Amino acid sequence: MKRELLLSLCAGILGLQMAAAAEGEIPQFNVARTCQGSGSVQTPAQCAQNEEAARNQLKPLWAQFKQADVTRCVQSVTDRAGAASYVELLTCLQAGAIEGKKPTDPFGPLPTIAK
Image (tube, rainbow, N blue to C red; front, side, top):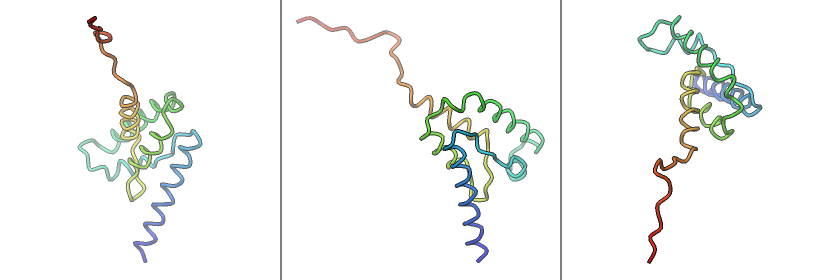
């Protein structure tokens, strides 16, 4: 019973975050929860500072990201407990933007050889 309740709560949180992302808004993540259980070497204060810096970087760029990338990344960075990271979201979105760009050949097109 508790497990079902937890799963439905997590699904609801994820749904709200994806709906916000679909409306063109940066989703609201619980930074305190993310930093509390991060298990990283940084302190919770440093974690919160990094999360806020990542969110501030996302603000001006948000409209430039493809909706498909936004939906995929929000879903990817949100764990089952409802914690999510702006740092991971920014990284995911930047990687998606890089993948979408076709690399250009620095030497130009291949020459045509006349027969």
